[in-house]
Length: 76
Image (cartoon, one colour):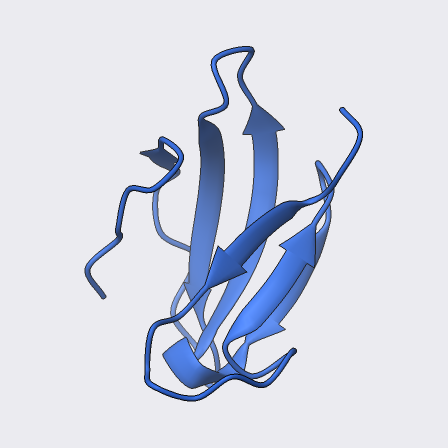
């Protein structure tokens, strides 16, 4: 893999760290526009990714892993 996975929250504004993060496998970052901490669990050979989404500021536990293919949207 030559580049990190780019994750974007489409909220009409562009600001790295707010609605745009770049992750390498087993890395996590906050996506403040979506109020999520995102963990990149793995990248498949077909380009899909498995993510773990955790609400920020909540005392709840992380959600189940989500599988996403390039260009797919996650409704949150």
